[in-house]
Image 1 (tube, rainbow, N blue to C red):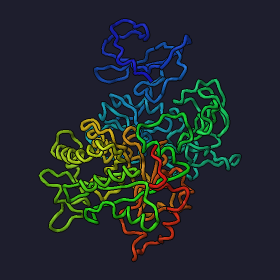
Image 2 (image 1 turned 90 degrees about the vertical axis):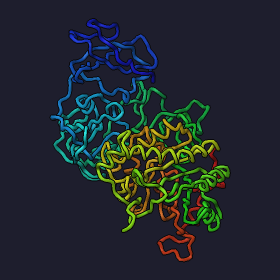
Image 3 (image 1 turned 90 degrees about the horizontal axis):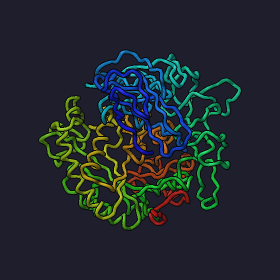
Image 4 (image 1 turned 45 degrees about the horizontal axis):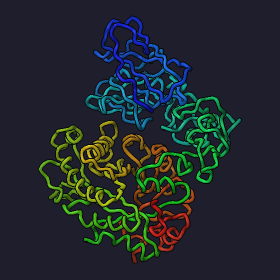
Length: 591
């Protein structure tokens, strides 16, 4: 899409493309979405006029633009939506953050909290919002006010009208897969209260994922797909006319890999390499993960400093016990040392041997005046400087405030790690970088903080600094949570901030699918994987969870230890590594 017609200034007179009536003040801005190509057929778009003195919505204007062959991408229409009637929200609560039930990953922008009200009214499932000045002003949309906390500068309000979803706001938040009252109750983000195909005619409605044919009564709409609306809704896997016909939610009309060159297009899932004509990444690793998801999975093994300078000990043990090398090599910028060169050099060797590379960062709290080399895993009576520790709210606020003492120290730590990442970059190594892992894990000093200024904010700061300041271009950003709670939307940094989503399984994630499903909800079409686990996932588990693109086993002697006491046996691990679904370094094709 081409850019906004940004800041169309009014000077007490009508402008050719925006007809503004009775404007007494020149301090106004109309923001319209641009179209990529024009025809002679006009369409009308209304644009609210924002008083730049106080941010209040003053009225509406009428813009006449030409109809594009593709409809305008609704995701970029942020502050001003196509509604002549302004929404009504509750009185704004100052310095309050609504901490739960986020429904957006890439949340819309607004220069004022008042502007979020109209955005909420135009967003399906929105019942509340929190505004912060992040990125020039952001509306963190919520399904409702289900929790709140003090937050300096945050401004929050509820929206109780039916809005565009038809939900009255009189209901409650219903757990996934449970019975709900349609147009009354709320479901989790990317879930909806609908009739399951098996329940047609029974009157029963349940909270179900909006994708993949889960709902028999869910209408489809143009959304941002670019379909002109002249076509029809096509069943899954059937022939369709691209940019004319509709497919089910999260399915698209595209060219199957087997149909390249034939001109045939069919309705296919948007994920997992189903479409040969979808854009590809410049990263070989990302292309691989997108290609294999749905059919195969990359095996992986973590390595850390427990074996001294041998940063391939665990990877080599997998080869010894299964006859195959893992396809993913993982290492760690571990605490308590200032020399990561052995890990970096081993990662270069593994990349050159055909593996894909993952790096973690078990970082120490950036406490001013403390050296990372003195940090330890857990606090003791003589040393409280540890990874398993807590920051006070004041310390946390200093950390995420640019130029404050904790923030300055954190940037120094990033400067240090960036040097090693640049070494990998200069050697052509792509890195799946997974900082601040297990973001919902409250034991780590960085984890367990919800809200716009919580853990996800630190992740955003980290990515922005590494990419914008250090110009690192070899990083594939991995966002990671654990199977502790499934409120992952409260930690999601936004789809623009991560490339891959992963789940660490240390609790009951292998037999309770709520965690896997919650991860899929937040990941959208991005690759997903098991970020850490003590066990190699079984073949039956992988067969039942086909969205997974990779798994990684922790640096625990695990199935190849003589005295291993966990439930998994060596034979179990060998069965997984011997499966045709599992890719190892020997048969990994990075492209």
